[in-house]
Image (cartoon, rainbow, N blue to C red):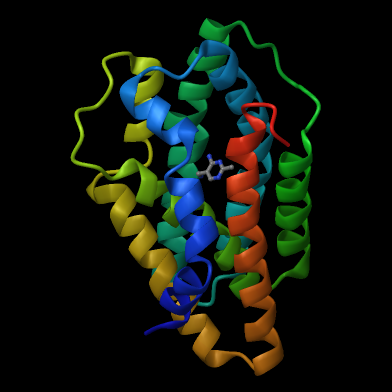
Length: 211
Ligand SMILES: Cc1ncc(CN)c(N)n1
């Protein structure tokens, strides 16, 4: 087992509740109500802004050139392809951002702000790892993709060889960094991992007004 694998196993109940969430099931079948998707994407637009800032912090603090370049490339994709999806999806759903953050979103914004301000590469990596690994997990299925681009593209942004390689890099980097820090710093990374998994589940619940 590795550091990341241990944390993934320790959080499996919440992790599996998130990856098997009703939102994910309805997205895959293309049956998620527009109002639910609109609420989710409006909140995720807030998430995206701080996520980009966190990627920037990881670029700045990485202690390995190849990792810094890989994170910078992913930052570029989020700021282009993913942002483009948001612009088209929010316009189609009639959402005019910004909206007020719901509690799980605020929790994520605070977690990402803390991680960024900490200046600790390992902490930034840990938030990025949960956010990307959990999404890769629910977006990787043998099922037929839904016909509507609104649903299909959100899945496609989180799967495939490129996204899998990105998550592999985050896992390898998180494990490498965790092996090189003291127990206190490793415990902090563990806390951040658990908090991020809790927030991912709460974020999906909030799309249905459950939080
Ligand atoms: C809440 C949340 N978590 C993760 C992701 C995938 N980057 C996202 N877009 N939104």
